[in-house]
Length: 134
Image 1 (tube, rainbow, N blue to C red):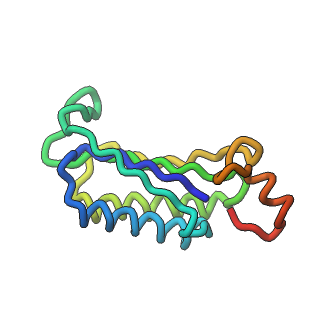
Image 2: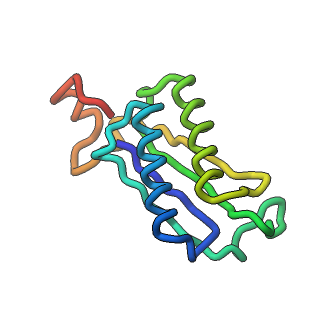
């Protein structure tokens, strides 16, 4: 049940590019991290390019991006997480074009007691149905 926030330094990003990026990241979460697409939420945060800095300067000719994903701690291996980070960076680069020298992908692992959706923690979901995927 990932929550994804992608901050992009382009307030005019085309709607089809936005939808494609959301679809790409959702598919990668399913493929690399074994997450269920039907409970994956993607939020795009489009910000003005003049508010994006790398090394204290505004990059030119590139689109700044930062991708954050919240997942339940302990549900993925190091190899799965590394594969997702690699593939997600490639997806950003493919959809947005050239990226600045620093474009980050972050996985935030949250304790199952402190993370859930629809009013139920992940820990409680596992107690109800031990076969439930996160």
